[in-house]
Image (tube, helix red, strand yellow):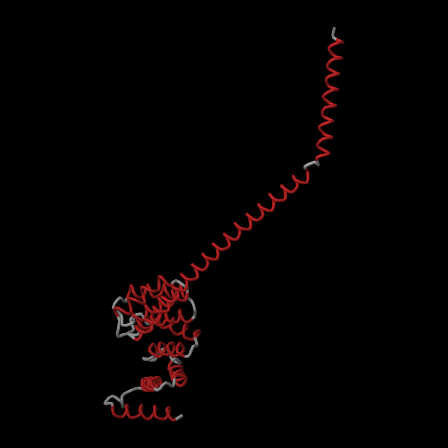
Length: 263
């Protein structure tokens, strides 16, 4: 409550000290009041003021209020309202000074909504249209963040490096440097997991080979044992030999009888 009263006092003093204060219309005064609330961090109250300014599309500050309403909703996490306002502004404010930032905020909204592919495409187009924009490092950062969120670390890393090397004064430079460290850690972890997986696969392969050799040995041992069990005793061998002699003698008699019959 105290901050709101302070904001109102600051607004009144600004109006009174301004040579144009007496000529300033109601909507412009209300817009300035909303900016004071934003600066004070009173976003909900500022949103209410911007909402009042949107009641008339003929207001000279309508487009500016529309942009700021969308930006405040984005800050408050009210993404549906933010999207509606920003898209409405982009449709009507092609020549407005805030159009460039509105495009940037649209891309940031896509990231916050988790639409990473659309965010990347949007910022690629933004960077192509505004290569010298003050929002370039931020646009690069959110593109990199989208790639990072998708797990495309090798593609995200050059963008972070570009921010760190070329936009050192940007607030995103330190965040980009931190992400680079995370990527380095993640890549080392991935390499370690790959080595562990390879070792595990080699272990499984070796274990399977040992199991196969063991099975082959057991099968050979079983066959050998069966053969040993099939070997006849000495008595059986002698009986078999005697039986063979009897068969040979009988075969000889049959051959002799055959020869005598043929005479």
